[in-house]
Image (cartoon, rainbow, N blue to C red; front, side):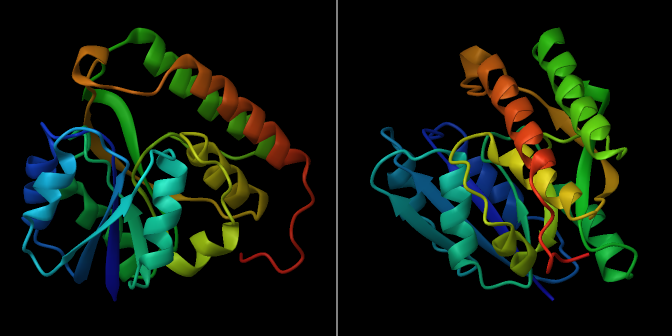
Length: 234
């Protein structure tokens, strides 16, 4: 199996070098590629990416910033692996956790795996951020009669073909809710494994806001009212 690690990047010149180094230093149990999409960065991110010479890394550039969802779509369209996982470049997530997400897939226990930030061993910049995350996740559980622990997690591992079939249209952070809503609508329940997490604050460049939470709730409601595709994967 080959794993495509998809990294959307926007104005991360202070972190992108470390993000690449950490991602490539992991002892993965399978072949990997790192597909980096520079989503119209206006700082020195592009120059740093241009100096990358690891053959496992492919860099694709958007001329203008289009949002996380759009960057992930570009990465997925260019992915060559059978499976994919998203890894942001902000150093909030530890790529050393990715092999833990792969374990249930490699031993046949799961097809879709989420990394669950339990917020028990973590560093979060805001009480309201944690409560907002839990509120959106609870809304998904109520709407779809499911029991997942972390809808907004970046670590979503699944077959590339499955992600493509979801036809994700959200261009920004709403893609997290759209992915989960469409999976749950197809009655695909993610397998969850605990992961570590260190949130950064506004002064460090954190971009998600309360408006993204409102959008996530709207997207979940929209997906719940849609008819389940007849040929949906189970």
